Image 1 (tube, rainbow, N blue to C red):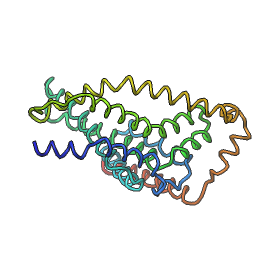
Image 2: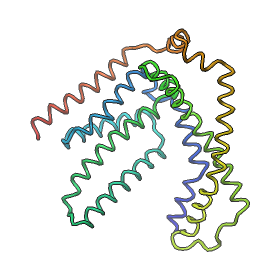
Image 3: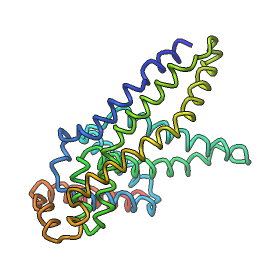
Image 4: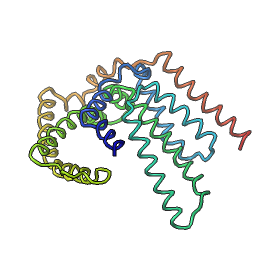
Length: 273
């Protein structure tokens, strides 16, 4: 009971909001934030697609170690790492239990281990890119690679608006908590309190959607007033927006080092498996 109480105290709305704000606005101190976003996005596409076609434990394990290193360089929030670990454990754990239920044995853990490694590589690569770089740079990188301007801006806007929406959600949830009453008896492992908060989450959904629609309308009006649609279709405005993107030595060093590391993994795999 004391352990559960400590976890409830650590996982608070204020703590989650602080972690989201740090992820969305505090990525400038990361080592990878100085790299060109075009190179980082091409690097991400490789590690998001190639692991699904690899079956070697050595190569997948080496990729996992490399992704752990890049995640550390990105200064990723511990809260995001915790959510990732819980998701991987929950998803693979349920698959293992289901396999045992339908007649499997301990040998079914090896394919699930391979799946876990693939999911870890792809997930850590995503965290490295979207937590280690500023959303505006990611948007500019997508625009420079030929992605439509509306999509690249939507990605950056959604990334930026996430802490604001969470603040709105926090206000709605607190208003319901002020008008409601928590159960006096918490029950075993605080299950009554958990059910109470789940009900509040359902109640807060529709007010949050209405507040989001209102904010979206205000944002669209402000953007159109400043000529956003015209700027997206104007080649001169696009060129001016992307003028700061330049390939430098550390970009080629990072991409070349990554390619060399992957080549060494494939070379070692030929002599092991």
